[in-house]
Length: 150
Length: 407
Image 1 (cartoon, each protein chain N blue to C red):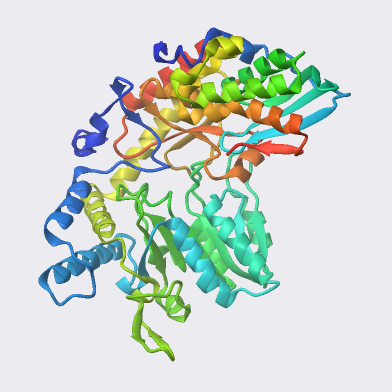
Image 2: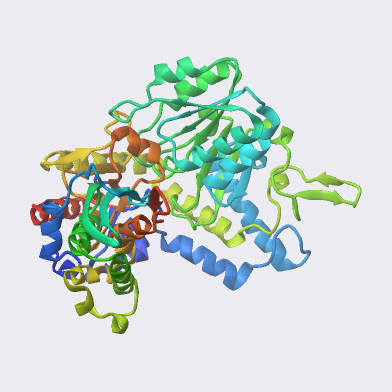
């Protein structure tokens, strides 16, 4: 049943969808940015706590599909303790993994996030996976109150 | 329904033989666009192979032939919706262009600052945005009649919103997001009593039921070919002749003129006044072929067969735990919009796709409807005359299986 989808919907994704990590409002957040994917209606609010250029805490609220929820859940886990430039670097790698050609992707470099590599085969779902990262990008650049992927 | 020739119909649609992800295609995205029968495909191939040239221009044999085919299709459309005259049938790209045309010509001429345009809360974006644009340009006001939790228009509220400032009521005949069929006769009667023009957006209704514009009494009726088993890129704006005569042209160019000098231009007669430039000739011919095809089956038979499909699908869907139907109007066409507890429509769409089932997941170009039901999106299975109860079983089993996986 749904064997063809095992690359896309790995168990880790179901797990993060059922029990999203860091899923709460952060009252004392330094950055708060909303991400919205109007095509699917995925909507999330990302909260960051910063110490200098270091991300000391990350959390989110919102609702979306399993791919977007797992993606933002995993992202909040992995960026904690990273510097802004390290997080930006991860964003670039993640972007490359989900949209780029296979040979260019170094899955080891992004650890756990590799479970989302499967979206590459589903162009309609790539934006579900990248919404979280575009939102993080906007939060780090502190440019906008809300961002949208279309 | 033993008389409905479902096997023959299915055999006429070559794409239904396709395998999707190694499984037989179950195509349930008909509200987005319908598949085409071989007869429609052949009509286009035949035109381009044997009868193609530009229309309304040449004295040569092929141009005459192509013009005959093109105008013949207009005749078929006229009969299909029972318009009074082919002068009332204008070919456009689709329902969207038709509404924009009406907004920019009828609207700009007849609707002034302070006037009101009345729509409903279940409109497709294509019957919202052109009016918002017109309101911005003219200072007119857009009013919206509400819907209830069944997804039905609250008719009494619509009636209350009609004032002596109301210049146009633009209503969807059948909702693409909910399946609701609106009480358009009642709306038209109320409008006529106050001399208000009525536009019906028939994009969704036209493939599912017989439509008689004279019996309805609407001023405008618009639809797209691609939802009527015809090619994409072609659609129809029906308008009452007297209204069309009084409207200024939409686009300027060839074919819509009678005489051009640098000083002035005399416009062509109806319907050519609204058909500037070389039209989508082959697509019009394809639309004619689709209408021929449907006439053999009979729209009454289509409606009866699809009502049976919808009743079957609704009953099965209601048995699924955690499934909530969005749109349960008493008068409803063959559309099943739903959400599942804790499973996002896009996940449903991808899961079903892996089983060869094509549905739509999203806001269906009706974001205000999503807001009303407080859902980000819905999954929508929309049926056509070539669908079967077996396919509905495949859908229902697929939904039950994916619920287990997400558990």
